[in-house]
Amino acid sequence: MSPSFRTIWTTPQKDVEIIDQRLLPHEFVVVTLKTYKDADLAIRNMTVRGAPLIGATAAYGIFLAVKEMINHGHDDSFLDEAFSTLRASRPTAVNLFWALDRMRAALDNATDFLEAAWQEAEQIVEADIETCRLIGVHGLPLIEAIAAQKKGEPVHILTHCNAGMLGCIQWGTITSPIYQAVQKGIKVHVWVDETRPRNQGANLTAYELTRHGVEHTLIVDNTGGHLMQHNMVDIVIVGTDRTTRNGDVANKIGTYLKALAAKDNNIPFYVALPSTTLDMTIKDGLTEIPIEQREQNEVKYVIGKSATGKIEPVLICPETTPAANYGFDVTPARLVTGLITERGVCAASEAGILSLFPEYKD
Ligand code: MRU
Image (cartoon, rainbow, N blue to C red; front, side):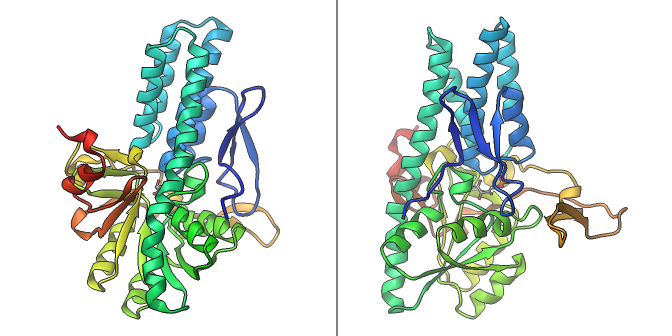
């Protein structure tokens, strides 16, 4: 089974369309991006989110900026402003900067700016689909090996946040091996961390697993350790927003605690990522990866569908209580069993990464 829809696409008029992920799983609403500021806002307010999708949206944002520049007769400074605005939209996912650098290079070498921006954004999107499919091809044997030992019992996979197709364009990173395993008739069951504060697990991972008929159970974020102590988790697979040269992994806040629990219980802890999420310019994740801090209200309120059918925020603490909202944490490489990439599985170390991506050798 290949995923049935994409998360970003273009119309015959070359408008850019996305799904408003803030409304899932309750409503499937398509939003049209007409300006680069629309793309910037969609990234900032998390209408779209997930490292690869943030990069793709920024790339189309630059395409829209070029279109605006030509239509309104703006000079180059308009485009520079678009690049710097989009660069500041979210700090942790390195795919954003990778995609913008690619767009800049494509435009630097172009004679027809609009065509160049269009082609480059399209290529970024198409490449991500194939990359995620290949992550599935390489991750599948890990699930198959566990299934072989379990003799017909389901393979229990725990995941955090949403590193599924909704965070990418189509296959997802952690979901690609899962979808391919299900396609092969392997019994899989996914423990879905709800992932406070924004609940991407409950809202998005549960949604896409439901849509694709994958057995799953929603758990609160603190349940994973208990499940691992009772042999109810066979493997943990998470995504990442930035993985360093040393193999340190930034991912949604709470990932580190899952890695610690997995280590204590001898459970394999894998990270699925496209190479566009590697940041080979830095080594130490703890000191060098910028961790996004978002507004307090994401912690103080929970958004859901009320009995009246309205999607609305509910305050869950005293109004005056201050909240801290760190978006990501860093799991040190020593806690990571392996990285599942589009070129294969490697150790979370410089040597491991270079064995698959020798082009990054100094
Ligand atoms: O804040 P988000 O929803 O953008 O965070 C998403 C994650 O942490 C994902 O795990 C990561 O971006 C990988 S998506 C394939």
